[in-house]
Length: 169
Ligand code: IMP
Ligand code: MG
Image (cartoon, rainbow, N blue to C red; front, side, top):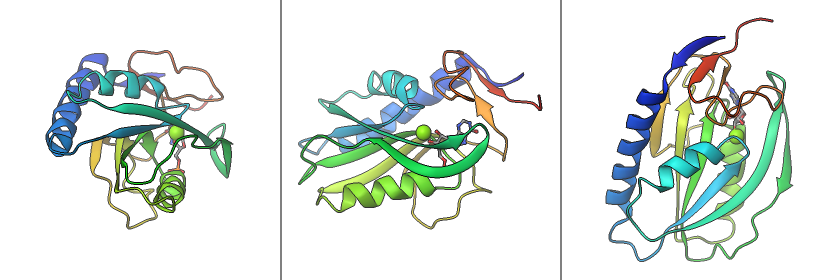
């Protein structure tokens, strides 16, 4: 495995995303962060500590990958809170084809929130198949499969502090 983005770069970027999100929502009366499990749990934990606002945190668990191949979307745990009239910020680890985030966006939007925006730590512009805009992107990356900082390959490597490119086995 080759190191691709180190711990320090991630930390700096997460801090600046937190500042930008704080500025965007500071005049709103409420903010609900919706964490997309499992991959986003580490990003979420660091990001929310860089947002200087009162906020609530909710979870949805959806999976799509099987090894390094894209698969069918499976909703493992649905939303269990009242979305109506809330400002929802969806926090994703990585947006690849965009299938997952677009599904979640539509799913949330149907429940009449006040607003829905997306923050993703990683974005693969060459793989993205949708027009929907993503408000916060940590890093644009090429079409490579990465692991670490919450991201897995067959459930392994989530606990690595840096981001690595998974090379052919
Ligand atoms: P999408 O639906 O194709 O956009 O895929 C998004 C989901 O697939 C993300 O939430 C990740 O869980 C997973 N994923 C996509 N690319 C990678 C990667 O490079 N490494 C690890 N997981 C990935
Ligand atoms: Mg994910």
